[in-house]
Length: 91
Image (tube, rainbow, N blue to C red; front, side, top):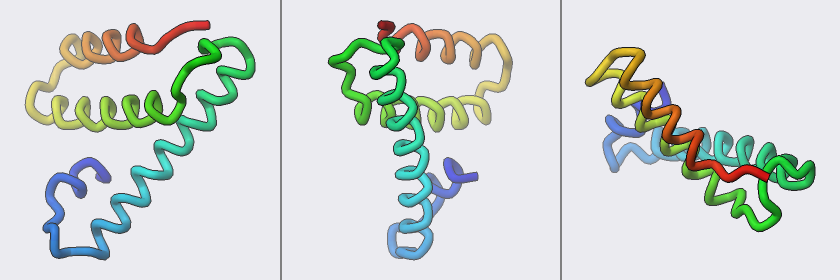
């Protein structure tokens, strides 16, 4: 729903833009916290830019939501998910 809202909201609808932006920020923050923990625990390299990685994962997720609407099918989405996971560094 957040993905759809962010694509369909009118630029003059500031209340909705703020809500959608806040939702995106919460998702990014959640991933950034988890990635920070993964760095501390050695699951990700110590030089990982956790904020950038979090933004990438959130954006990728939203892109997958759009793709799911236009090219529904497990194989397509699984291929994209696999590529996303391959791009995440390992410790």
